[in-house]
Image (cartoon, rainbow, N blue to C red):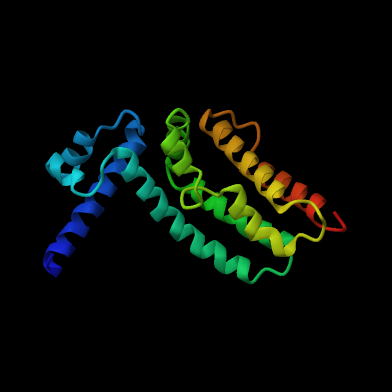
Length: 197
C-alpha cells in the first residue's frame, strides 16, 4: 500500500471512529448500527468492514485509544508519587477524567453490560487495555503498600467502587458524588495499605 493510500485509510478509520463515538453518545451502543455509522461519516458499509470485523471490535479500539491518552497522564503522576495517598490520588484523577467526557461513562457502562453474555467479548473487555483491571490497579499501588494486605484486593475494591458509581451516576440518583466515592475509596486503601491506616 502506498503512503497516500495509507494516509487515506487512516483518515477513513478516524472519520468512522468519530462518527461512531457521536452516534454511540446520542443513540447508545446497541441502538447504533454499522450502516448508520458509515452513512453518518459519508462512507459505504464496505469501508467499515475493511477496517473492522464488527461494531464490537471498533468499540474496543475506541476504548483502547481513549484510555491510552488518559493513562499517559496518570502514569507520569504515579512515577512521581512518594506514597500510597499520592498514587491513589493519581489513579482517581485518571478515573475522574474518564467520566468527565460527555456521555462516555454511560456508553462504556452500556457496552460492559452488553458484553456480559458474550463470553469472548467479556474476556476481551477484562484485559487491561480496556479497563482498570484489578491486576493493573495492584501493579500501580504495589510499591507503596506498607502492609501485607494484598494489592489485588485494593485494586478490586477500588474498581468495584468506581464501577458502582458509574451505575449510580448513569441512573441519575445523585445521592453520592464522585468526590464521596473517591474519598471513601482512598480512605479504604490507606486504612488497609499503610501502617498508620
